[in-house]
Length: 391
Image (tube, rainbow, N blue to C red; front, side):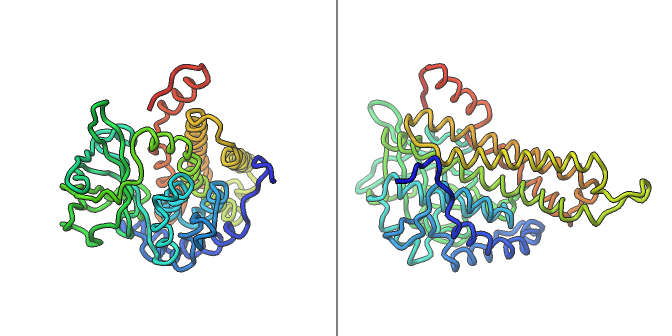
Protein backbone atom coordinates (compact mmCIF):
# COMPACT_ATOMS: atom_id res chain seq x y z
CA UNK A 1 0.00 0.00 0.00
CA UNK A 2 1.36 3.42 -0.96
CA UNK A 3 2.49 5.73 1.83
CA UNK A 4 0.01 8.68 1.71
CA UNK A 5 2.86 11.09 2.41
CA UNK A 6 4.49 10.03 -0.86
CA UNK A 7 1.35 10.10 -3.01
CA UNK A 8 1.35 12.16 -6.19
CA UNK A 9 -1.66 13.91 -7.76
CA UNK A 10 -3.21 11.99 -10.63
CA UNK A 11 -1.91 13.45 -13.90
CA UNK A 12 -5.11 12.66 -15.84
CA UNK A 13 -7.16 15.01 -13.67
CA UNK A 14 -4.56 17.78 -13.87
CA UNK A 15 -4.44 17.31 -17.65
CA UNK A 16 -8.24 17.59 -17.83
CA UNK A 17 -8.06 20.88 -15.93
CA UNK A 18 -5.25 22.06 -18.21
CA UNK A 19 -7.33 21.29 -21.30
CA UNK A 20 -10.19 23.41 -19.98
CA UNK A 21 -8.14 26.36 -18.68
CA UNK A 22 -7.46 28.11 -22.03
CA UNK A 23 -11.17 28.41 -22.85
CA UNK A 24 -11.84 29.77 -19.40
CA UNK A 25 -9.02 32.30 -19.81
CA UNK A 26 -10.51 33.55 -23.08
CA UNK A 27 -13.78 34.45 -21.36
CA UNK A 28 -12.47 35.62 -17.98
CA UNK A 29 -12.08 39.33 -18.67
CA UNK A 30 -15.46 39.52 -20.40
CA UNK A 31 -17.27 38.00 -17.44
CA UNK A 32 -15.39 40.29 -15.08
CA UNK A 33 -16.12 43.45 -17.07
CA UNK A 34 -19.84 42.61 -17.31
CA UNK A 35 -20.30 41.32 -13.74
CA UNK A 36 -21.73 38.22 -15.40
CA UNK A 37 -21.95 34.66 -14.09
CA UNK A 38 -19.64 32.25 -15.95
CA UNK A 39 -22.45 30.15 -17.42
CA UNK A 40 -20.54 29.02 -20.52
CA UNK A 41 -17.61 27.97 -18.35
CA UNK A 42 -19.90 25.88 -16.18
CA UNK A 43 -21.35 24.20 -19.25
CA UNK A 44 -17.84 23.29 -20.41
CA UNK A 45 -17.04 21.80 -17.01
CA UNK A 46 -20.25 19.77 -17.03
CA UNK A 47 -19.80 18.53 -20.58
CA UNK A 48 -16.20 17.47 -19.95
CA UNK A 49 -17.08 15.48 -16.83
CA UNK A 50 -14.93 17.73 -14.63
CA UNK A 51 -17.85 18.27 -12.24
CA UNK A 52 -17.92 14.57 -11.37
CA UNK A 53 -14.21 14.09 -10.57
CA UNK A 54 -14.83 13.85 -6.80
CA UNK A 55 -17.65 11.31 -7.11
CA UNK A 56 -16.41 7.79 -6.17
CA UNK A 57 -15.33 5.59 -9.07
CA UNK A 58 -17.88 2.87 -8.32
CA UNK A 59 -20.64 5.45 -8.87
CA UNK A 60 -19.22 6.51 -12.22
CA UNK A 61 -17.16 9.47 -11.06
CA UNK A 62 -13.48 10.25 -11.18
CA UNK A 63 -12.67 9.13 -7.65
CA UNK A 64 -10.44 12.15 -7.01
CA UNK A 65 -8.83 12.47 -3.59
CA UNK A 66 -8.37 15.80 -1.85
CA UNK A 67 -4.79 15.80 -3.16
CA UNK A 68 -6.02 15.27 -6.72
CA UNK A 69 -8.58 18.02 -6.32
CA UNK A 70 -6.01 20.51 -5.05
CA UNK A 71 -3.70 19.87 -8.00
CA UNK A 72 -6.48 20.00 -10.59
CA UNK A 73 -8.07 23.15 -9.17
CA UNK A 74 -4.77 25.02 -9.02
CA UNK A 75 -4.36 24.30 -12.73
CA UNK A 76 -7.95 25.20 -13.63
CA UNK A 77 -7.63 28.50 -11.75
CA UNK A 78 -4.76 29.53 -14.00
CA UNK A 79 -7.45 29.92 -16.64
CA UNK A 80 -10.01 31.67 -14.44
CA UNK A 81 -9.85 31.89 -10.64
CA UNK A 82 -13.50 32.96 -10.53
CA UNK A 83 -14.70 29.90 -12.41
CA UNK A 84 -12.45 27.59 -10.39
CA UNK A 85 -13.74 29.19 -7.18
CA UNK A 86 -17.33 28.72 -8.34
CA UNK A 87 -17.00 25.03 -9.12
CA UNK A 88 -14.92 24.41 -6.01
CA UNK A 89 -17.97 24.72 -3.77
CA UNK A 90 -19.48 21.85 -5.75
CA UNK A 91 -16.35 19.72 -6.07
CA UNK A 92 -15.15 19.88 -2.48
CA UNK A 93 -18.71 19.51 -1.18
CA UNK A 94 -19.23 16.37 -3.25
CA UNK A 95 -15.90 14.94 -2.07
CA UNK A 96 -16.59 15.74 1.56
CA UNK A 97 -20.11 14.28 1.46
CA UNK A 98 -18.93 11.16 -0.34
CA UNK A 99 -16.20 10.58 2.25
CA UNK A 100 -18.18 11.40 5.38
CA UNK A 101 -21.85 10.79 4.60
CA UNK A 102 -21.98 8.54 1.55
CA UNK A 103 -25.01 6.47 2.62
CA UNK A 104 -27.16 9.58 3.05
CA UNK A 105 -26.13 11.28 -0.20
CA UNK A 106 -25.55 8.45 -2.68
CA UNK A 107 -28.68 9.27 -4.77
CA UNK A 108 -27.37 12.80 -5.20
CA UNK A 109 -23.88 11.58 -6.12
CA UNK A 110 -25.42 9.55 -8.92
CA UNK A 111 -27.20 12.67 -10.15
CA UNK A 112 -23.87 14.50 -10.36
CA UNK A 113 -22.66 11.83 -12.79
CA UNK A 114 -25.84 11.20 -14.74
CA UNK A 115 -27.95 14.34 -14.51
CA UNK A 116 -25.45 17.24 -14.47
CA UNK A 117 -26.34 18.10 -10.87
CA UNK A 118 -24.37 21.02 -9.39
CA UNK A 119 -24.09 21.60 -5.65
CA UNK A 120 -23.77 24.92 -3.84
CA UNK A 121 -23.19 25.61 -0.17
CA UNK A 122 -24.89 28.16 2.05
CA UNK A 123 -22.99 28.61 5.31
CA UNK A 124 -21.97 32.28 5.63
CA UNK A 125 -24.50 34.63 7.22
CA UNK A 126 -24.73 38.37 7.92
CA UNK A 127 -24.85 37.75 11.68
CA UNK A 128 -22.17 35.07 12.01
CA UNK A 129 -19.87 35.40 9.00
CA UNK A 130 -18.49 32.05 7.96
CA UNK A 131 -18.85 30.38 11.38
CA UNK A 132 -21.34 27.69 10.51
CA UNK A 133 -21.32 26.31 14.08
CA UNK A 134 -23.23 29.39 15.23
CA UNK A 135 -25.94 29.73 12.62
CA UNK A 136 -28.56 32.44 12.86
CA UNK A 137 -30.69 30.56 10.34
CA UNK A 138 -33.18 28.45 12.27
CA UNK A 139 -34.72 25.04 11.60
CA UNK A 140 -38.03 24.51 13.40
CA UNK A 141 -39.64 21.08 13.64
CA UNK A 142 -42.97 20.83 11.79
CA UNK A 143 -45.09 17.89 10.74
CA UNK A 144 -42.97 15.64 8.52
CA UNK A 145 -40.01 17.96 8.34
CA UNK A 146 -38.48 21.34 9.08
CA UNK A 147 -39.26 25.03 8.52
CA UNK A 148 -36.16 27.14 7.74
CA UNK A 149 -35.82 30.89 8.20
CA UNK A 150 -32.71 32.95 7.61
CA UNK A 151 -30.34 34.57 5.13
CA UNK A 152 -27.27 33.01 3.50
CA UNK A 153 -24.63 35.30 2.03
CA UNK A 154 -22.09 34.39 -0.65
CA UNK A 155 -24.08 31.45 -2.05
CA UNK A 156 -21.39 30.87 -4.67
CA UNK A 157 -22.49 29.77 -8.12
CA UNK A 158 -26.16 30.24 -7.33
CA UNK A 159 -27.31 30.98 -10.91
CA UNK A 160 -26.04 27.56 -12.05
CA UNK A 161 -26.95 25.38 -9.08
CA UNK A 162 -29.34 22.45 -9.13
CA UNK A 163 -28.94 21.48 -5.44
CA UNK A 164 -28.40 23.42 -2.22
CA UNK A 165 -26.39 22.27 0.80
CA UNK A 166 -26.80 24.45 3.88
CA UNK A 167 -26.81 24.50 7.65
CA UNK A 168 -29.14 25.89 10.28
CA UNK A 169 -29.54 25.75 14.05
CA UNK A 170 -32.04 23.65 15.99
CA UNK A 171 -33.12 24.59 19.51
CA UNK A 172 -32.83 21.58 21.83
CA UNK A 173 -33.05 21.07 25.57
CA UNK A 174 -29.26 21.05 25.64
CA UNK A 175 -28.96 24.23 23.56
CA UNK A 176 -28.54 25.03 19.88
CA UNK A 177 -27.05 22.41 17.59
CA UNK A 178 -26.25 22.49 13.86
CA UNK A 179 -28.26 20.61 11.27
CA UNK A 180 -27.41 20.20 7.57
CA UNK A 181 -29.77 19.87 4.62
CA UNK A 182 -29.21 18.78 1.01
CA UNK A 183 -32.10 19.38 -1.39
CA UNK A 184 -32.97 20.29 -5.00
CA UNK A 185 -33.18 24.00 -5.60
CA UNK A 186 -36.91 24.85 -5.49
CA UNK A 187 -36.83 27.06 -8.56
CA UNK A 188 -33.98 28.16 -10.83
CA UNK A 189 -35.41 31.58 -11.72
CA UNK A 190 -33.86 34.70 -10.20
CA UNK A 191 -36.08 36.96 -8.13
CA UNK A 192 -39.20 36.03 -6.17
CA UNK A 193 -39.25 32.26 -6.02
CA UNK A 194 -41.89 29.81 -4.88
CA UNK A 195 -40.85 27.28 -2.32
CA UNK A 196 -39.37 29.69 0.21
CA UNK A 197 -36.09 30.63 -1.53
CA UNK A 198 -35.44 34.20 -2.68
CA UNK A 199 -32.38 35.90 -4.20
CA UNK A 200 -31.53 39.19 -2.49
CA UNK A 201 -30.11 41.14 -5.41
CA UNK A 202 -27.38 40.70 -7.99
CA UNK A 203 -23.80 39.80 -7.09
CA UNK A 204 -21.47 42.78 -7.50
CA UNK A 205 -18.09 42.80 -5.83
CA UNK A 206 -14.47 43.94 -6.00
CA UNK A 207 -13.31 40.60 -7.38
CA UNK A 208 -14.52 37.10 -8.20
CA UNK A 209 -17.21 38.83 -10.23
CA UNK A 210 -18.12 35.81 -12.36
CA UNK A 211 -18.97 33.59 -9.37
CA UNK A 212 -22.62 34.58 -8.95
CA UNK A 213 -22.19 34.52 -5.17
CA UNK A 214 -25.68 35.78 -4.44
CA UNK A 215 -27.24 36.30 -1.04
CA UNK A 216 -30.29 34.07 -0.58
CA UNK A 217 -33.18 34.32 1.87
CA UNK A 218 -35.01 31.30 3.23
CA UNK A 219 -38.59 32.45 3.76
CA UNK A 220 -40.35 29.70 5.72
CA UNK A 221 -38.78 27.06 3.49
CA UNK A 222 -40.22 23.66 4.43
CA UNK A 223 -38.04 20.59 3.87
CA UNK A 224 -38.84 16.96 4.56
CA UNK A 225 -36.82 14.73 6.88
CA UNK A 226 -35.32 12.98 3.86
CA UNK A 227 -33.28 16.11 3.15
CA UNK A 228 -31.44 16.05 6.50
CA UNK A 229 -27.92 14.67 6.00
CA UNK A 230 -26.61 15.06 9.56
CA UNK A 231 -26.92 17.06 12.77
CA UNK A 232 -25.29 17.70 16.12
CA UNK A 233 -21.92 16.40 17.23
CA UNK A 234 -21.55 14.04 14.26
CA UNK A 235 -21.91 16.93 11.83
CA UNK A 236 -19.34 19.06 13.66
CA UNK A 237 -16.87 16.20 13.98
CA UNK A 238 -17.24 15.30 10.32
CA UNK A 239 -16.55 18.86 9.27
CA UNK A 240 -13.37 18.98 11.35
CA UNK A 241 -12.12 15.63 10.06
CA UNK A 242 -12.97 16.50 6.46
CA UNK A 243 -11.45 19.98 6.39
CA UNK A 244 -8.74 18.82 3.97
CA UNK A 245 -11.44 18.92 1.30
CA UNK A 246 -12.58 22.39 2.24
CA UNK A 247 -9.69 24.68 3.10
CA UNK A 248 -7.07 23.14 0.84
CA UNK A 249 -9.19 23.13 -2.31
CA UNK A 250 -10.14 26.77 -1.84
CA UNK A 251 -6.50 27.66 -1.22
CA UNK A 252 -5.57 25.94 -4.48
CA UNK A 253 -7.69 28.44 -6.42
CA UNK A 254 -5.61 31.33 -5.11
CA UNK A 255 -2.37 29.51 -5.83
CA UNK A 256 -3.63 29.20 -9.41
CA UNK A 257 -4.39 32.92 -9.53
CA UNK A 258 -0.87 33.74 -8.38
CA UNK A 259 0.64 31.32 -10.90
CA UNK A 260 -1.38 32.99 -13.66
CA UNK A 261 -0.14 36.47 -12.66
CA UNK A 262 3.44 35.19 -12.60
CA UNK A 263 3.16 33.46 -15.98
CA UNK A 264 1.70 36.57 -17.60
CA UNK A 265 4.50 38.69 -16.18
CA UNK A 266 7.40 36.46 -17.23
CA UNK A 267 5.92 35.93 -20.70
CA UNK A 268 5.58 39.66 -21.40
CA UNK A 269 8.67 41.17 -19.73
CA UNK A 270 11.23 39.95 -22.32
CA UNK A 271 9.46 41.98 -25.01
CA UNK A 272 9.55 45.27 -23.09
CA UNK A 273 12.31 47.90 -22.91
CA UNK A 274 13.06 50.97 -20.85
CA UNK A 275 14.40 53.31 -23.51
CA UNK A 276 15.66 55.79 -20.94
CA UNK A 277 17.96 53.11 -19.56
CA UNK A 278 18.58 51.54 -22.92
CA UNK A 279 17.82 48.08 -21.56
CA UNK A 280 15.16 45.42 -21.76
CA UNK A 281 13.16 45.13 -18.55
CA UNK A 282 14.20 41.50 -18.18
CA UNK A 283 17.83 42.66 -17.90
CA UNK A 284 17.22 44.93 -14.89
CA UNK A 285 18.52 43.46 -11.59
CA UNK A 286 15.47 44.63 -9.66
CA UNK A 287 13.13 42.91 -12.08
CA UNK A 288 15.16 39.73 -11.99
CA UNK A 289 15.11 39.74 -8.19
CA UNK A 290 11.35 40.28 -8.12
CA UNK A 291 10.77 37.38 -10.51
CA UNK A 292 13.11 35.21 -8.48
CA UNK A 293 11.24 35.99 -5.29
CA UNK A 294 7.89 35.25 -6.92
CA UNK A 295 9.12 31.88 -8.16
CA UNK A 296 10.48 31.04 -4.71
CA UNK A 297 7.19 31.94 -3.04
CA UNK A 298 5.14 29.96 -5.53
CA UNK A 299 7.31 26.86 -5.17
CA UNK A 300 7.15 27.02 -1.37
CA UNK A 301 3.40 27.59 -1.41
CA UNK A 302 2.71 24.68 -3.74
CA UNK A 303 4.91 22.40 -1.64
CA UNK A 304 3.09 23.39 1.56
CA UNK A 305 -0.31 22.88 -0.04
CA UNK A 306 0.47 19.43 -1.43
CA UNK A 307 2.13 18.36 1.83
CA UNK A 308 -0.99 19.34 3.76
CA UNK A 309 -3.17 17.37 1.34
CA UNK A 310 -1.05 14.28 2.05
CA UNK A 311 -1.27 14.72 5.82
CA UNK A 312 -3.22 11.89 7.55
CA UNK A 313 -6.13 12.71 9.85
CA UNK A 314 -5.22 11.74 13.40
CA UNK A 315 -6.80 14.27 15.75
CA UNK A 316 -9.75 16.18 14.16
CA UNK A 317 -9.14 19.39 16.11
CA UNK A 318 -5.45 19.47 15.16
CA UNK A 319 -6.29 18.53 11.59
CA UNK A 320 -8.80 21.37 11.26
CA UNK A 321 -6.27 23.90 12.52
CA UNK A 322 -3.49 22.67 10.24
CA UNK A 323 -5.75 22.75 7.18
CA UNK A 324 -6.99 26.24 8.04
CA UNK A 325 -3.42 27.42 8.63
CA UNK A 326 -2.33 26.09 5.25
CA UNK A 327 -5.23 27.88 3.62
CA UNK A 328 -4.24 31.11 5.35
CA UNK A 329 -0.58 30.76 4.32
CA UNK A 330 -1.42 29.98 0.70
CA UNK A 331 -3.93 32.81 0.35
CA UNK A 332 -1.68 35.41 1.96
CA UNK A 333 1.29 34.34 -0.15
CA UNK A 334 -0.79 34.30 -3.34
CA UNK A 335 -1.82 37.89 -2.69
CA UNK A 336 1.83 38.83 -2.10
CA UNK A 337 2.80 37.28 -5.45
CA UNK A 338 -0.01 39.05 -7.32
CA UNK A 339 0.93 42.36 -5.69
CA UNK A 340 4.58 41.87 -6.63
CA UNK A 341 3.53 41.04 -10.19
CA UNK A 342 1.68 44.35 -10.40
CA UNK A 343 4.62 46.32 -8.98
CA UNK A 344 7.02 44.63 -11.39
CA UNK A 345 4.78 45.10 -14.42
CA UNK A 346 4.35 48.77 -13.57
CA UNK A 347 1.56 50.93 -14.95
CA UNK A 348 0.65 48.47 -17.70
CA UNK A 349 -0.37 45.93 -15.05
CA UNK A 350 -2.76 48.44 -13.49
CA UNK A 351 -4.82 48.83 -16.64
CA UNK A 352 -8.06 46.90 -17.02
CA UNK A 353 -6.75 45.20 -20.16
CA UNK A 354 -4.10 43.46 -18.07
CA UNK A 355 -5.05 40.16 -16.43
CA UNK A 356 -2.78 41.07 -13.50
CA UNK A 357 -5.25 43.72 -12.38
CA UNK A 358 -8.13 41.21 -12.36
CA UNK A 359 -6.04 38.46 -10.75
CA UNK A 360 -4.98 40.80 -7.95
CA UNK A 361 -8.60 41.70 -7.23
CA UNK A 362 -9.57 38.04 -7.24
CA UNK A 363 -6.68 37.18 -4.94
CA UNK A 364 -7.97 39.53 -2.25
CA UNK A 365 -10.98 37.24 -1.78
CA UNK A 366 -8.69 34.63 -0.25
CA UNK A 367 -8.20 36.83 2.81
CA UNK A 368 -11.94 36.70 3.50
CA UNK A 369 -12.38 32.93 3.53
CA UNK A 370 -13.27 31.59 6.97
CA UNK A 371 -11.86 30.92 9.44
CA UNK A 372 -10.31 34.35 9.80
CA UNK A 373 -6.61 35.10 10.27
CA UNK A 374 -6.97 35.59 14.02
CA UNK A 375 -9.29 32.61 14.57
CA UNK A 376 -6.97 30.32 12.61
CA UNK A 377 -3.83 31.27 14.52
CA UNK A 378 -5.61 31.09 17.86
CA UNK A 379 -7.00 27.62 17.05
CA UNK A 380 -3.56 26.28 16.10
CA UNK A 381 -2.00 27.88 19.17
CA UNK A 382 -4.58 26.41 21.52
CA UNK A 383 -4.03 22.92 20.12
CA UNK A 384 -0.25 23.27 20.33
CA UNK A 385 -0.50 24.44 23.93
CA UNK A 386 -2.90 21.68 24.92
CA UNK A 387 -5.69 24.13 25.74
CA UNK A 388 -9.30 23.18 25.20
CA UNK A 389 -10.65 23.84 21.70
CA UNK A 390 -14.28 24.43 20.98
CA UNK A 391 -16.26 25.30 17.90
